[in-house]
Length: 103
Image (cartoon, rainbow, N blue to C red):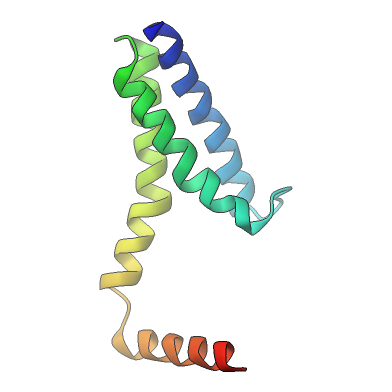
């Protein structure tokens, strides 16, 4: 049973990789609403399955792949927008958001 969990984790990694590539290349067949599905949910499920799965190459590949996708699509953008955006840009962005909401 654990072997199948590792295989499913590896398959989820490839599905996520294809989804992220098509999303960022903007040739996507997917709507923007599916980005959260490909960026957070599928890699998180794949990560949990890889942790529980049977030890071997497929487990390591699924584990590393899902971790890398989470880092590059969720963690790095969050850190950059939170800590490295200039305060004036952040202030302008928040003003534009308020204008869009009130309009």
